[in-house]
Length: 90
Image (cartoon, rainbow, N blue to C red; front, side, top):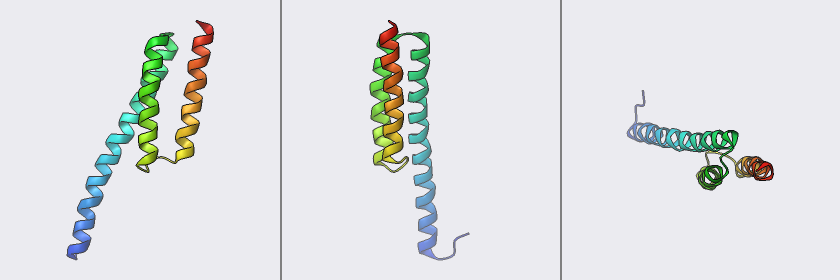
């Protein structure tokens, strides 16, 4: 347990930030899964909409420091390739 007032405050801030990060990370993962599910179902319109939301979430995660910017770019590239493959098959 933190003893000094400063350490107590840091502990409170860490809890708050951890909860916020968990929420952001969960929303990002959910949007990725939603895109992948719609891509597997072959629903191109739904996949395109989910792709836009997912890219926004990935950029937001990179901006907030949840993930590295290059990791977000790599994921977006892979999702875009999946979307193009879906469009080519349709």
